[in-house]
Image 1 (cartoon, each protein chain N blue to C red):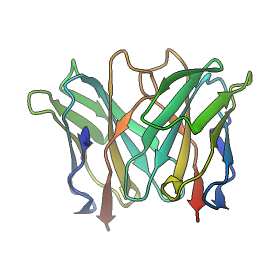
Image 2 (cartoon, rainbow over the protein chains, first blue to last red; image 1 turned 90 degrees about the vertical axis):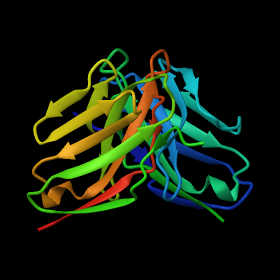
Image 3 (cartoon, chains in turn yellow, cyan; image 1 turned 180 degrees about the vertical axis):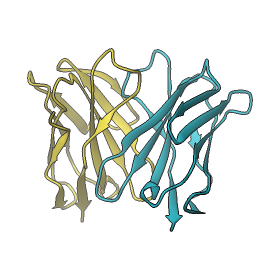
Image 4 (cartoon, rainbow over the protein chains, first blue to last red; image 1 turned 90 degrees about the horizontal axis):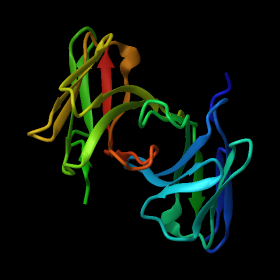
Length: 114
Length: 114
């Protein structure tokens, strides 16, 4: 069974640039959620995708957008990067209908915005 | 405005003793609670959960207690082992919300000393 994998693991961008983060969900999982974890904070919900459609969104501006593909992998795109976007971005997959709220997380992509 | 609060940033316990991690919440709509454990350079992993219709759930050395009237839950680890040293996140979600929309606390770093 393949777990959740994310790429890249680390990246550095400058303010105003755009970034794309990628996530492959655990085998058999059809739901992907993205979280932002700033230093010293808990993960904060960005949005969730279920069967290629956005299915819930947290308090993040529209410059945070995403996609889910037919194989259930996903992308998180952030436009017009700001310094405060520096954080660990976590992808989590789950199986729709599985035990409520139980997510399987990847190791994360650490983004630094200079 | 933190809806899930873990007021102790760190906790140190001797091996073999009990570890008690605490969590408070403010949103009375929360009806499902989870604990996640996170090692450095890894994503959070699910540990144990509890529905609001219960006041206790056990899984091996881990027990979660829920006090709805006090809006408080706690995680007990007995006996504590050095491998339990990690950051523990409390998370909550509300019925009817998207499956992946978990609200996390800031975490408590547990150190279990041999």
